[in-house]
Picture 1: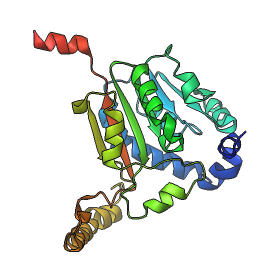
Picture 2: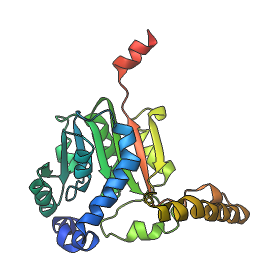
Picture 3: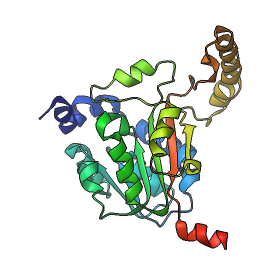
Picture 4: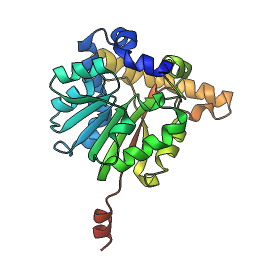
Length: 253
């Protein structure tokens, strides 16, 4: 067993217990994240099959259930985290994504947050292909990863020993366009800033944009295209839609 597998096997005790000490805070964070960045893309798929790859303790599954999604399941390598998700009443299984997406299971939505960067580089393309093959026609994949253009991206890349690779908006889109049609792949910021309170609206809705404009001006003067990168976003999200050829053919009639 290699070091990564040892860490994944005991991920709860080694890392998760320290990252997610306050379950209510984590639930609130994932709820905001889901409502802001995920829900708009799948709001019409509430009765369709949804898989979360890397479901952890069931935080995203809880958000899905809260917003009316009824046919959800999750997979994760951590036996302890899967047990916690099951205790919450979710259909969850401890398994490897490559074993689970074996060609026999089909989903309308596949969600994966902060998983792809843990997969070895030589299996990145295979991961994307497995996701593509597992989607029903018209299905959508929502895959979130750390943004290597972020100002503190070195921390994101090396904060976890099991991180294998990093992505920018360009390289992430490249990977998904290997299998999804180019016009069906979009990479967007997955900001961790939510404007729920008056204080947040003032600081992040008014003050932050001014500071960002000043930084972009500084980077523009600095040159070399520095003002064009997404330095202000900690994570990015790819929305990859699998074409429904039947609908496309009907539209062409």
